[in-house]
Image (cartoon, rainbow, N blue to C red):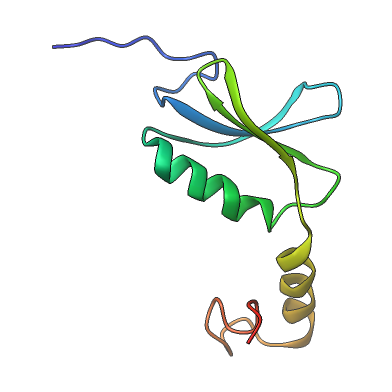
Length: 99
């Protein structure tokens, strides 16, 4: 049996997606993933749902693989659709993507 030590965030994942402030201090740990391809896809999708003021980072252990600010693109549309329609009226992704 192989025993692995937890990483500095306390979980056992290889890759982590975090939100940090402007000084690089951890604000929130979003999730952990073991597969690098899935981690990149998840990071790319999360960029669309976070504001431009938040810095997202994708880590491989302590090494920062990617760093990006949010886009606000789908966040604004999602918030607008929540205000104007019933939650169960539409599919989850209906109205979020360009036609």
